[in-house]
Image (cartoon, rainbow, N blue to C red):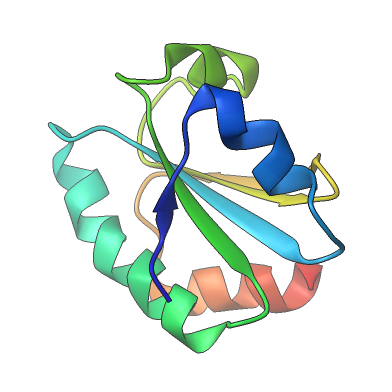
Length: 105
């Protein structure tokens, strides 16, 4: 499943739709750790078809970064019905990400 890059104008509709868990990867193109995390997020998107995965470039969408208090990247925010359930900052292992997803689904 392809990971959709969200703009501020479409963010609320995307993350508030339905009962499914949503994972948003806040990243920057210049960020080395973000490049390390990206394949992990892509692998999770392939594994968890019932979870919606999105990416937000903080340089293109600073309003969203500010809204979710993203101070460093990468930051993963886990939401359900628009409510933040969990947040991780920095590179996480596939096992850590799986544990968080399974806990929150």
